[in-house]
Length: 319
Image (cartoon, rainbow, N blue to C red; front, top):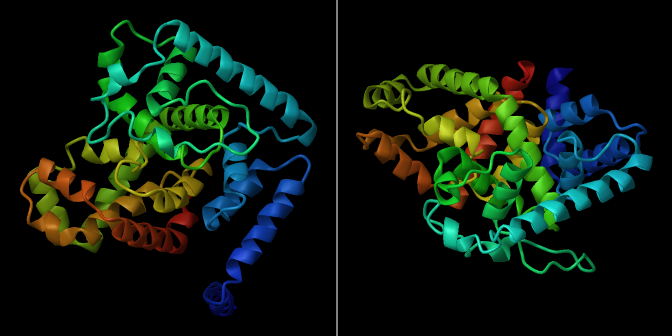
């Protein structure tokens, strides 16, 4: 019976019917009142969320959209007011021109160069300026009473660079600054709250790699990769610095559903896929260079391989 279901699923996927089934399933969940977090999480862990429903599912899983439909308009209004207050406060402090503060904060990126990635829906409220990723970080720091006097130095910390990298990718998925801000803030709170689960996923990945490719594991161990912070930084930035949006979105489906262990499979798939150039490296910096130059096509292969392995093994052990 299991083999028959697997064959049917593979057949539907090949002829393009799996996406139709998944879309119907998500639309049914969105119509439930109240919406059920566990059902959404189970779906997102076991399936790829359809693109047309992805932002709605993400906002619900992140706690931005309330369970009851009658509350959604009011909550949305309050979220808009919160964003406007923070944005106004940011500009009143003279931090609207963040480019002069953060032009060197993100490795290899010009702070102004990504402003055009932020999309705005037709008919949406016009904004005097388009917020940059650094703006979303500063607004979050302000909301958490963590904004320091030396803002330039604060923007350069690794942790804040992760937030900026995530904000840059989130800006590609959502249409308004209000959504982008609240999604970024919720993602970051989720990561900070589950720091131990992320660290455990990294340790799981090291053990999985040893079983899958002992030679590569030993090579990376000897050069000190596993005692460095490189893998931790990649996980806390959700690979946003190295993977394209089409690969990131599939990882975020699982993370927002609470399946942090999927990071183990992404790490292993990435290292195994890049094993030849990694074997040729002799330092952690060399590893950083290799994974920083992963091509878009390779990233797609890596994430697909990781999720296939996850569905076969990892989904049994959630979290």
